[in-house]
Image (cartoon, rainbow, N blue to C red; front, side):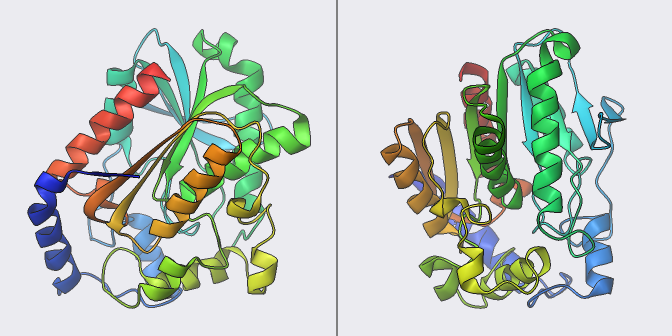
Length: 309
């Protein structure tokens, strides 16, 4: 394990403190009610301003009805299947246009972001089904659509969880391994029965905590017991990870999902694939959503990994 960005620790912790005590941020305790869910879906950070949609993004519907948003900066060297975060219940493919367009340009990638169905209206397995369908479409059509068959996959938080499930589904349901050359996994939840760090984090008012995680699991897997949530098709930490591609796994030290990344990296490596594990000093869950010095560094590391994988 490598602890990164310790030289920025004081700034990162100061931001956490400011965020945790902000009076104008809506409280999130457990599963969001209808009003809060509507607000979060307008703006995943719970503010009053929706995300900016850039003209570079193109909305389309793939065969089978799965919607995606694509960013193609010109001739590209690969295609990145991006899966957004948001606790499986909010966020959207159009929620990070600026970040995805910059990544597309700097890494010479076509970015395809999946507009998967959200809980609670569409609980498990609707979201994984949509991500699987988008991945299969890329395997079949990327060379004709984008001029390259070099595929990458990744996402943040719930999106990282869905990215791993997608790779497992491609392997187990369709016999597809090696089509995606790398996985970029940021602060994901890989054990929906809750790892020790999830359980012990408590009610600190950061972007995510024990209560919000538990509430999110109730939305995506309603009625499931903790034991049922340990099923490999729900919690990839318990899956056989053989045959998966090289991975980059990132998490902050102040994230309730810290153990998820540590444990998954160990199991990924034991299954035979290379892993780059980065643990960001002082960073909370979702830190890349905020204008921090550590965010700029992380996005540059992400770009370099995806450009060279």
